[in-house]
Image (cartoon, rainbow, N blue to C red; front, side, top):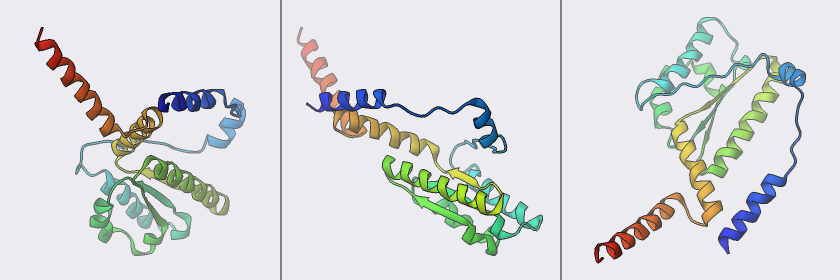
Length: 176
């Protein structure tokens, strides 16, 4: 039953029409944006790096109202709170944290951040920053979401069930 529901949802998603945009409109709306991925092991300085960007802005006398950092954080914000002492005081209110614990919260937080950044651009003419911390956690959330949608159980439960089946097959096969 759950597989049929999941298949129906998948088919409905596949059949949903989305609006396309022409290349010239895409270029006009996104040409001035910059995107990057900063990836590395824990404790190599990724969070410290983007917080240092705030110091660079301060050094170049950037008005706080011209800045906006939206940080989607799928964990406790311990890395950020450890480093907050080094952040320019007048910029602290220009960093918006979105702690998330599920895929649904991740999507909602990212959508909210995008709306805030778009409004910031309309108001100031300055681009802001969207930071997704611990991107590996976000990936795991998306996999868990998919597994719940497709199989009606979380990723861990699904793996546990597969392990039980494997063990049962191995047990059965050793008797022959």
